[in-house]
Image (cartoon, rainbow, N blue to C red):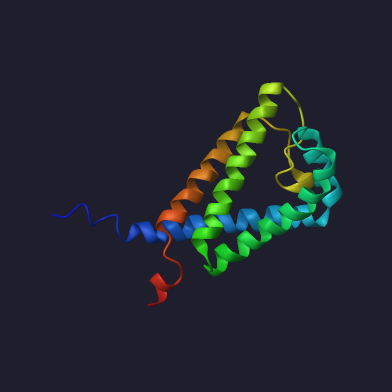
Length: 149
């Protein structure tokens, strides 16, 4: 009886599900921020972590980075690089959330544009979970070739 081999076919399928989940999250978040960059810039400003001159730059750059990560994850083009960027972004988001939760600020998350709620500890758990999923994809995802070869 080989129980060790049981999980092997499951891992690539689970990695694909995780990769596509991350892609959908980044695509939705990026498009929402691209639609209304002003609201996103205000959300960044409210975090009080960046100097004023960097806020507009980040508000314009970050949504495009999220969309590019999503496209890369969907197409499985440079998946490990996209998953690494994804993990770094979620780690950055979690750090920003932690700092402002410790400060006691009641601000909008800004995660999904204007439709985001105010920050709370569950958002931190969500970001850490997505960080772990990103690391899992970075390590175990084999791309589309695994399913079509």
